[in-house]
Amino acid sequence: MRILYVGEIVGKAGVFTLKKLLKKAKAETGADFVFGNADSATGGAGIGRQHAVYLHKLGLEAITLGECCYYKRDIVEHMGKLPYLIRPANYPYGNPGRGYRIFPSPKGKVAVVELLGQAGFPRVHLANPFQSATDLLRKLREEATVLILDFHAATTAEKEAMALHVDGLASAMIGSHGKTLTADARVLSGGTAAITDAGRTGSLLSVGGLDASTRIGEFLSGIPAWSKDGTAGLELQGCVIEIAEDGRATSIRALRMPCEEVLDDRTGDSDGDPGQGVDCPA
Image (cartoon, rainbow, N blue to C red; front, side, top):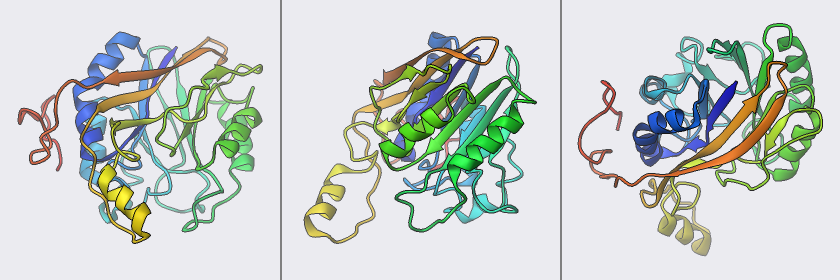
């Protein structure tokens, strides 16, 4: 089985880039299952219901989230109603939504698990992700052979530790949240593919997908500023993973695909064409 993972989609530039390149990326990689992280899709923090539906219609079979999963009020009531949304599993029991889901593919079932790290998220205090990973992956092994963990964590150390912790339990451990594609894609000794961070989809000439000048000004002054999306140097980033019939990974490679079209910041598109029969939310 071949898995295509799309790095964190940031703002309207990320949505635009996905719209323009996902079909091509799927065809060129020959992916059997496609999913990605969209924790920053709407305004650079969180995801709204319209964007969630739109990204699914564009071709994301599963959409993982992170610490911003409940930031947009309209998504909270729909978190459990949209069967492709996955918020961190270590949120309290009874919270809206689910932390893992099992999806069909031409090559068999795929279980996708989302967990949030412990460091760097002062607004949330969740259950230990390492214990949660062990419990969930062992449970899901009874239902699916291919198990993918998206670990949304702030530090490389915690993501590296998680990769080694789930080696032999998960088919792959994909790090997200850093929004910077790392050069450490590898298959561990137990058969788990791992990458510390699968990067971002959106503006590469930006600070984490957001307008560089605004963020630089924030660092210079110390005064918080809400930045608009970056729009220059658009690129789809992520990774491609090959998994054998026994659920062990055989390869993983990083993916970078530049977008040649230019985003019109006024319309959210280059040509006014919403694409694939659905309107692109602003």
